[in-house]
Length: 182
Image 1 (tube, helix red, strand yellow):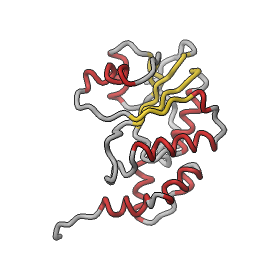
Image 2: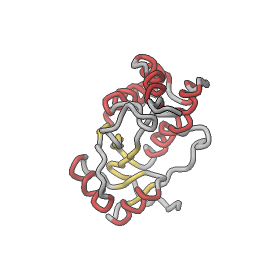
Image 3: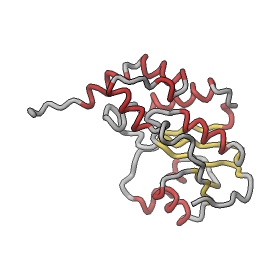
């Protein structure tokens, strides 16, 4: 899955849901800046929120990402943060992104479908190393939030602060409830 990175890229696309942004994402961003001048952070499933798998709105995720980048000392002029609604048509997903985003010359992902779709459209693919994937997973962080476990150390302080400001934990709990009899 790892390929030799051949050049420096003008702009690298980094798609993800960022539900929420965590330190694994931050490490990938640091890694990508070794290979690219600018990064497009495409917030996928932008239309989804208030659900267990997607509790935060695209706008909330945009603020979380921007604040975390500032907090981590990144030069914000190197980033585009763009919400991208889903389409249910994988074969045209890359051209859909091309119509919504600034031009990019490479895609960074570990997701096998994203890798496949990018390669089919002749994009270079950067597959980042794992950065404590067993710890840094949005699903695991949301599970910790739901079960009342400590989760704050997995995300930048600004992200934890925003989640608390928007009552994100309660939203996640409410989203997990059912009105059906058991």
